[in-house]
Every structure is written in C-alpha cells, then in structure tokens.
Image 1: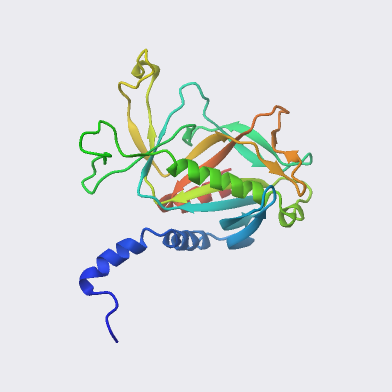
Image 2: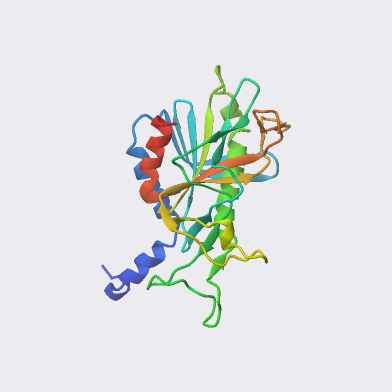
Length: 266
C-alpha cells in the first residue's frame, strides 16, 4: 500500500489535525463519560433556533438529576486572561427553573474565581508573547476568541430552554439548573491588579500576580428568552431586570474536577 503521508510529514499532518475542534470534542466526550451518574448524554445535538431562521449545535448535553450541563468546545491558539473586576463582587448568576418560569439567581462564591472581562493573547514556541510585528509594543490580541465562545454558548442555552423537548421535562418542583460550559484547550489565567495600578488616564501601569486556573466563572449581561413562543424573558429572581448570566470556562485538563465539584458541592 502506498504511503499517503510521508514519514517526514507525519508530525506536520498531526499538527494540522490538532487545529481542528473535533479532537477536543473527542477528549471531552471521554472525560464526561468517565463520570458516573448521568441520566442523559447527547452529542452534537442540533436544535432549531426559535427566534430566527437558524440552527444551533450543542456539542454535549449531559444531565445529572436536576443539573443540565450544556457544553461548547472551543479549540484555540490563544491563552485567555481574565482580569479581576475592582468594583464587582465575587458572585455568579445561575439559570434556574422555578414554578414562575426560568429565572436567574445570584450567589456569592469564595473558592471560585469570577470575571467580567477578558484578554486573549498568543505565545510563541519560546513562551514569549507573540507580537503583530517586530516593532509593535503590544501582544498579538484577539477581540473575538473568548467573545465568540461565550456568545455561542448563550445562544445554545437560549435555544435549549425554548425547545418543546426541554419544556416537556419541566416538572414539579421545577428546580432544574442550566449550566453553560465552554471547554477549551486554552490556558486560563486570573490577573490581579488594584486601583493604584491605574493612572489618571485610565491606563494600567502595573499589575499584581497572575494565577493559572483550571476554570473560571465569566459573568456577562445578555437577555435570554425561553418558552415555545419566545415571549418570556429570563429575569432575576428578585424581580429586577438583571440580565447577567454566568458561563463557566474550563480547561480540558480540569473538566472532571469541575464537573464533580458542581455535582457534589453545588
């Protein structure tokens, strides 16, 4: 049999395949399958997006009792940094079912890093920040890398809670928790800084420590609808029109740890 890929090209071919997202999906499937207790496991679930002529594909839907994990996989060449928010409290806002409908609820957390902002930068083979060109004084930056991932995740969440399939399993006591997750190969970092690190022009002049984390809770304001007719809005349980939602960003190597924490520790 003729050699399709030359031996000297094998590494190049493997590196090329690794740019595709399906291998990260395969690894995610293996990790999720290693965790016991799932009542429902679905892969590449296509759902008609109810609010425009469009469809979404949810990479994975895993259900454990009342917890519905909606998983979007995102392969990237960037590393993701999440600066701390100086004037924001350390909270997450979960999407919950209730007798009054699907709403959100905010709770304080202590052991989980939370973020409201992101910076995606690229490192070279030597571990140095890649620059757009030799004379640039900034790193190679992506404004879309993280945003595309969480917007897709929220769109999939909105589609999921609007399907007849989900609405048919809403039963008393209406206590389902919808947990959108972005699983990635990207390294995740939490960036600490304080107000003294910002000058009078609003420019950062220094920062504190940078901590690599396995997962982080990203808070983002987004209006979501639910229900078959799409005329119901996901509001905060307090009655306010607080539209913040939390998406969990998880490095693939910490996925099992994150899932187990969410299953057994809330």
